[in-house]
Amino acid sequence: MCGIVGIISKGEVVPFLIEGLRRLEYRGYDSALSRLERLLAEQPAAGRIGIGHTRWATHGVPNETNAHPHADRRVAVVHNGIIENFQELRTELVRKGCTFESETDSEVVVHLVSSFLHEGHAPAEATQRALQRLQGAFALALLFAGHHDLLIGARRGSPLAIGYGEGEMYLGSDALALAPLTQKITYLEEGDWAVVTSEGVTIYDDGDRLVNRAVRQTARSGALIGKGGHRHFMLKEIFEQPQVIGDTLNTMFNPVSRTITLPELPFDLAAVPRVMIVA
Image 1: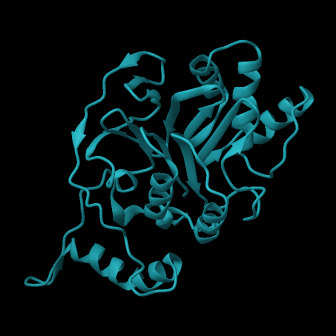
Image 2: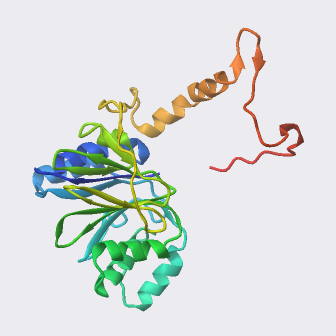
């Protein structure tokens, strides 16, 4: 599980990207935000549009080369999830002359979209064609060279939210990342992809049909998810396991009657020969 954020801002975007990443740290900590902050302090980056990523490494070791965004001279991408057919696509793209720098599955998205841009397609059409080739569960945010008021996001199996500001627009893996910026949120539905500019968003479903999605007022607090006194989120999650298990059991256990009420299931639990847990 990774975290992604994208912002089109009226002012300098970097501080908001850093804050969004801080709020997404619980989604993946194979990244070094403290080092990023030091580098930005030494070499400030300017701009009004940007994307960011916190990584949970699935393909390729945690290092700078495998860190997102991945980019070429046409497009930059951040990605949460897994591209299941990345090896097939990578082989195809290498045969076409593409050079890969990382070990990640995410980089195939860059070269795939870029190949359609090279053929003369506009960013939205290039993204649409790339999405038709991708298999897996993922959320994406894309930036395009020469398009300073354009973000494209896509959701298939992994969550992605769009936030609305005054002349600003936001993308994030969840509302928590966007809470300091807006409480007006649209959650993309399965298979949706969205073209975002500072003036608003155009959303398409998995059949590339124009659709309307509800804008919701979220009550998500702007407060950070804390580490609870632990050194890092992984340690926090380990120590929270007894509490989480207890909270789950308490939803089914009546302490007065000392009975357990299981949710209705579409099968007879007593007839199940074994249970397999996959994580």
